[in-house]
Image (cartoon, rainbow, N blue to C red):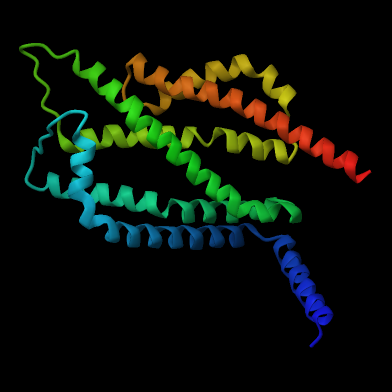
Length: 260
């Protein structure tokens, strides 16, 4: 078989795949696809959790450093905390695949020439989540813990439960990881034409207000420090998004002029 014939066959197969992807599907079919992707993601998370379980003691010692020592209030609490931590670590390890499954689910809403961006989007989501989680653990958690423990008195001594502490930092880390997805979400909306840099600049004051509202909603405590520590990155990420969207617009304009 000649190279030309082989290439034609590959083009026909690619076109048929695109036609199948573009074919309208019912709500039931979308729900079935969503269920299969969720089950596959959970399976990966369980496998990753089992693989990282042996490293839990070292990880536990690492995350306890900001407070020095923790306590468990029931015989089974320490065991279930380690199981929960293994699940969280497994989820993080499987996160690139989970993000890939999520972006594959919304693939039907993308144009043909945009479907090649699924893998870069999944990778970017994982990198941004990692940056948000790292920013939270290394910068926010120590400040927040010192601030909250400073309210102790001679007659009011902190006795922190390991499960409560894990829930506290887990909620913070997850909140920051999701919040750091903001530039990616805005760029996707700009790519499909729903927003532009002009609209983003006009909405800047509302973004500042929304940052503090989201900070208050996502942080597990009611103190202003944690809320502000989350609101400030949101505002910075929003400003970064304006700059990235502007670059995207200039690139698209340059390509359009080049095409003409």
